[in-house]
Length: 495
Image 1: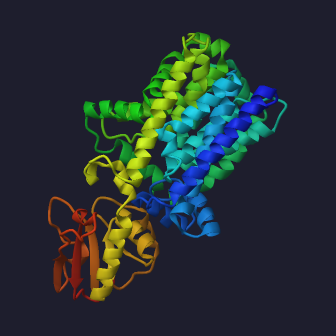
Image 2 (image 1 turned 90 degrees about the horizontal axis):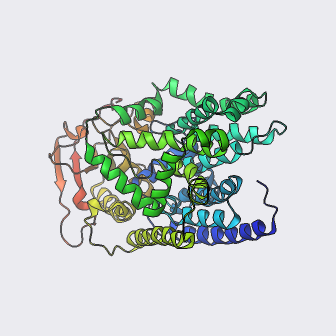
Image 3 (image 1 turned 45 degrees about the vertical axis):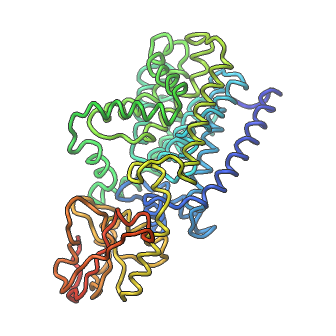
């Protein structure tokens, strides 16, 4: 919908100022919080652009590659794409709500609510594939709501947005399923599918997706195989996980917004909606598959709180329709809006404060925000020890390798973890064989069993550096510092 009415233009300006201000605050915070290991891992991908990676599709790595190329490698550049995606997603919530006949005021507060939820406020500060997926999903809905038989632009945009969904995360394929459901169940959907201009959308989407599929086929299934195994392999019935997932959604959306979005999943599928409000049904088709998949998976293993973010980005624009006449007329809407925004905003502020200056006495291993601190200190300790010993620095697992590499500024030898392959294993397979250094300092994540790293088993001598006392890094208890000396000068085998 074109913003032409004076009220809509004025509201759009207000929202633009709000989002610019909020993005500025996020930019300030981005450089003050240390990278999480996963963010450092994505930066490692970004150094070697490709059409795919072992864990995820390539869009996030491409964007970090561009940002780091322009601004240098830093916490700021790694997170800049997430900050931009967050602001754009909030704007698209506003646009999509307007297209669904919300008033400018209703659409404005919906966008503010989206920005206030921890799901988007934290997701707009930390680099994750979910933030890119939520933006791409919202963009897909934006163009799908504007398809016209006499206009090429929305069809081209639809194809681009669909490709971005797939290139953001493998659950982006559910956007294809959502559009297929819409085409199968509604007359406007079938007409759109049979339109000659749908070929434009398909051509654009396939042109971007096929190289990614080719990369996966050349790498034993790539991220598609890994994520399928991750989601469906080794599952066991665990109903408490289901309750944990529901609780996490109350936390990341706020209870009022979570209740509204969940209610829409129930009422958005009806014959009356399908026949009289097909655009509302389109929102349901794009929201339900991902939300229901996460709900079902939560019965068997842990589902991260941000995994269904894209589903809520499709559901929330339909909430004004639902509560302002589509299904009910909510009494005292200003009170409910204030509660939704206020509670979500308070949750977000508390999380940000905990990340910057921990004030809630949560053990580090249980504090999700703790993943954003302690790495610089740990890396400095490891680099100093390696230099004092005259040893090369190595680490077990992709996470420790990535974060040490970023904060030491030096190459860190990757050592595989039994049973958990990563992108580093693919890179090792593509590199020429390398001789092992005679002396290594290996950082190994601490486990219940004292197990020397495989690379140290044949060393002439191996011992542990104890890291205890008040001067030890805060993260030292979670790692073992192995010193391995007299390693045979042999060629390192490929994993």
